[in-house]
Image 1 (spheres, helix red, strand yellow):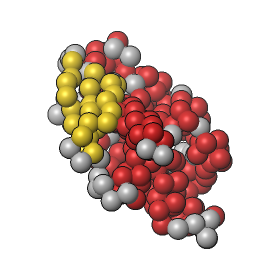
Image 2: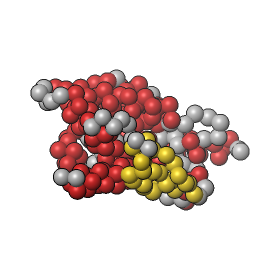
Image 3: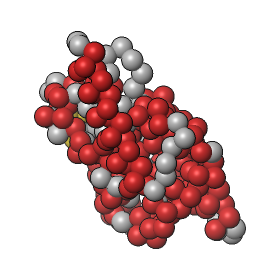
Length: 243
């Protein structure tokens, strides 16, 4: 690989990252954090991807949202706070926010991943948003992350919580089973098809050893949510039949 090609690639990535800075109205002191946040694992050979930043961003987002809910709802108990938090930090919500930012357009992907529709994959854009939050935290501190979350996530708080498309069925199912003394639902991959960049997962959910639902999705999280939704319908139907 020639030096000129590497330089052109580097310059393109700098320009691409700068474009996102304009969208989020935050300029990085160290733009390397931003470039790393946008680097999907398919776009790097042996170098670092955005996966570590994603892990950090997930924790930072959880803290910011938890603090907001703690102050905003002083009379809400721990269970309700947990449920509401889950409604604000799940993959579907992150995808919705990433879509508003057109984040998929800025992610660095391999040609193969891009051809397979990677810029619109829920797992990729959701992970990139969490990585972006991690990068903002390292570059500008917790206060900067709070302002970002307040503007792009919490500003639409009520709509997100009430949007059934981003509803956390897994959280509701867990609350239901634990409240009735039935323990935790168990999710199991029953089948998976396709190459790594086009994987489809089939997941079943069991409670007390009985299967109550199944779901299919391009990510494990998506399939689990669909399985949980089916299980909730089945449990509620059984409850109504038993009076």
